[in-house]
Image (cartoon, rainbow, N blue to C red; front, side, top):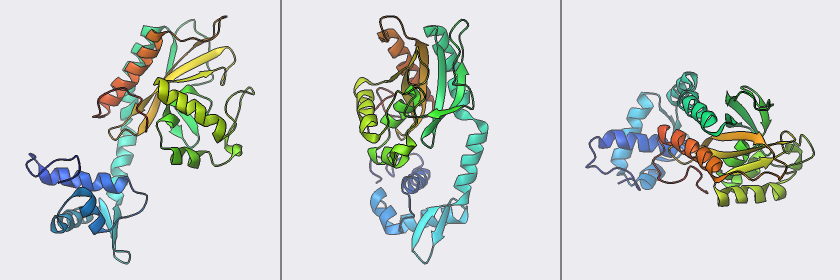
Length: 269
């Protein structure tokens, strides 16, 4: 039986096992031997080889005979490309971002990680609110934006280190914000502790943003939801209602994307 997965008593055990194999291969950077796949999923070797044979025939898995290993095939890439073309994240998130802007009265946006930057894919502007540098298609340093900090805080530490291998990868806009991993880590720790990310004047003086991560079905962060508001004379102290609205929006997008875990949309990893 796959760990935490379906048993042979499931309505469609073969389909479940196929998905388990593809999911396992997608989580490893290098191809795996059949024995490892069988052991990790708790499957008999004979069953594993039958599943792999079908997946190889259909192009979803490629066999590397010299290495005696199996990796993802081109059919998986084709499916992923189709998924990207259909824009499901934007289609799911847009009405919820509109509701968030209406509910809070602040500009709201959705951004995805793009290297060590974030790329803005949705912007919902509120009439009368300050104009923003973030717009659809704009890239900003992830370490400066609330959306980026929310996403980074949900990534494994090793991946964050890989994204920021040196101080040269840190960029400031107005002389504020982290300049190294040692100054970024406390911000990520604080984000995980509080359940939301915050930036105050890092991107634009006088403006602050709070954000929460959108998590996919494997709890990997796929985007960040944020609202931006002016900094008052007494400083930035976001109301609990505003924080809750951002977290609820991110959690609902996560749910609609298929996240099965129960709880907050920001789960420490």
